[in-house]
Image (cartoon, rainbow, N blue to C red; front, side, top):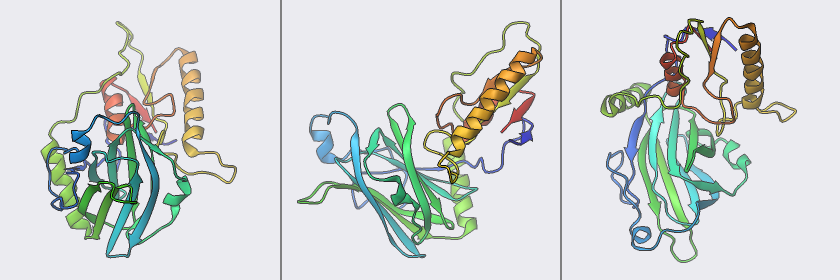
Length: 269
């Protein structure tokens, strides 16, 4: 774990370009709009339980790369970019991923790897790690046809770093002020002890590095943080808050906001 002041935002806390995706193959590349439910899904009763992702694959080269995810039924989703490092994020409703995680570990074209999992209650996320900066050229959902399942399609096109960064920055301005922090610890009245915010990295969908013994980095750093919390609290000198105490993914910006909302004197990450 390294140390840094809570008032200093960590490198890479870039804002995202939120691209609202219409669920049709002729969606305008890069256009922002309200999420649109697939036409057939909207006309029929809601399917019970989460959609199931049955397969995923990459195609293309270093100029244009496509990610396809097969689904049991169409879903709405949102695609946006994050910098430092370059990533594309797909936010979906609850989805059960029924294919092996190793599928996402093979580099192809503009994509180094992709990972996926639960992001929050009722929500799933796919994180696409990029080899270099890209533009989201197309993002759409295809209805099931004949023997083909419903498919989520993401088309990425190579761009330069300046264009990628400017796109992310434009999205930051469009989104406005960040949301208020929820469920943060509140200092007890009269408690003047300095606050230390412990930030175990990774969590949930983000497992971090997996060692030769198959231990995930997210679990190791959480164990260390919980042990450190107990020792600090036992000293009686500090009040300790944690950005996460379970196997949960917390976005980077939210981690910083938790520290600031609790007026942390020290942010340990």
